Image 1 (spheres, helix red, strand yellow):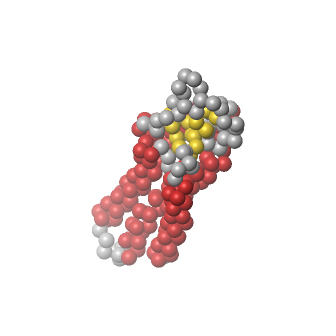
Image 2: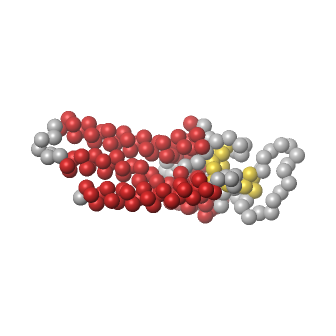
Image 3: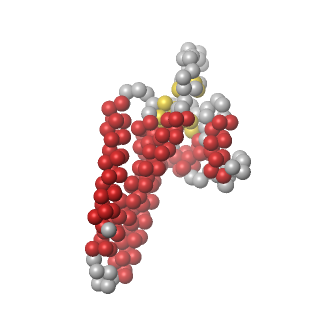
Length: 198
């Protein structure tokens, strides 16, 4: 049983279904912005590391095979960083870094279990322009689907995976604060590393 945030609490249904509070639109937007920053930081770090090595070594003396290996390794590291932050975290903890800071979790329609591997991958695969084309709005189709679904507030990626975004239990504010404080420090570290390289 899904309850909208801010609605009056309802008594639990007699059939044993859990009552879960849906995530608010503000929480979801905040989580998405934090995830963009987190993924950018995680994917930029390998690139900056390779650039630092290339710039600190005389390019005339660096073998082409070594340079190619470094670039391929960097690309693989970037893909693994994306997969770790977007898919693995969703399966193991039910949330990305941004969702954890925002205090929301992703669960199946039963309201209890975190998504499995297939659900997590379907949730983050591209949803507009492919199998879930519900309107000609392009990226705004996700927002349109959110406002259209009054019961569960599912976006297209939620519908593709069979998931719902709900509020997390209120028992971990200190962890969320520490995690939120590390993002600006990580961004500062990436900026300083870029300044040192150039």
